[in-house]
Every structure is written in C-alpha cells, then in structure tokens.
Length: 216
Image (cartoon, rainbow, N blue to C red; front, side, top):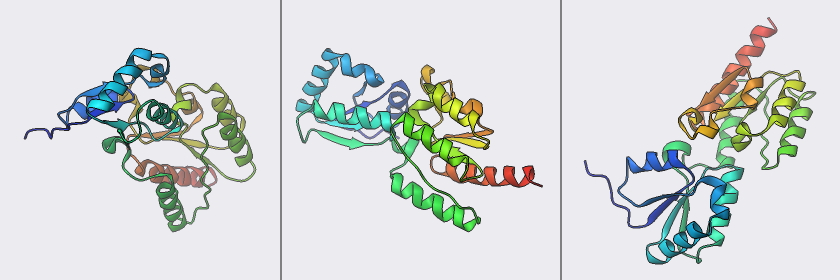
C-alpha cells in the first residue's frame, strides 16, 4: 500500500521521530536536533522558507522541552504557517488533563489515593518528591527530559523512603543515544516505557502490589 502524501513539510525534534514518520508518510521531514536549532541561524532561515512555500506540520514531545521548542519554532515562523501536532504513534492525542482523569479513575477503582503533579521546573519536581515522603506511600514519576540530565532528581528519589516507578510514554531505549541513560531510573524499582498512558496504569498496579508484599 502506498504511503499517503503530505504536501506540508513535517518538522520533528530528533532522528527517531523522523525515522518513525518516514515509514508511514511520503513527505519532506526536517529534523530540528532538539535545542540545537536555537543557535542554528541557517536552519531557522530554511524553516521560514519552507513555511512560506509549503507550510509546516510541527511534531514535538509533549513535555517541558517540547513546549519550549514548539514555542521557539512557532515564534520564528509567520503566523498561520505552522500546524502544531504530536506524534500519534508515540504519544497519542490526549492531553495532560485526560491523563490525570484516567489516573484518578483507575486509582479509585483500585482503592488507591493519588495526586497528580506536573511542572517544567526541576526544583518544583524535587520539592514535590520531598513533600511526598510524609504524604504518600510511593511515587510514579515521568521525569521527561530531566530523565537524562538530572542528578538532583535522582538524589531526591534516593533521599525519600518511598518506592518509585518510572514511566515514559515512548520507548526511550529506541530513541537518540543521549536518551539511553536514566538518572531517575537508578532510584526506581521498576520502569515502564513505550506504553503511552497505559504505562501509568501498569505503574500504579505494580506499586500497589509492591507495597502490599512489602507490608505483608
């Protein structure tokens, strides 16, 4: 079956996204290289040219880094020439509010009390981990891009006396080389990746069973 043709230029964060999309659509796909695009004046000019001539579909990760990249790229391109989107095969089309609704519903059905927290700021995440030490029995964490950079979050997870489960919507092990290390994962009892929202449900189930066995 022939791949559907896309007339707009598809712009993605990294090589993994480019390889994934190139398997399912016939289109010109441009890789940003993450934050590197901020200092690449030639690529910025090239994107503006493509946006003017063909229009751009912009795919980014639904995390803090993706938010920053999305806004920076959109700010450099004439209004109306960018269609913002996520990569459905990796992240799905639902937003953070939908995720929280699913988590609360699942937790309630299992008799588990949960609280959702999200921040793009490393310090706020560390504060939440520390506060959880006296309020909760365990932590489910998706550190997003901080997974690969934050020793501080690793230290915070190690410092609290709580079991933690790491979740990633995409399979980060199949992505760029710099994503192959997880500092937060070093302090977690389990990791789920590549399952989308389902990863959170699995994490809650695992953590509930883990705590029940530890307290038996």
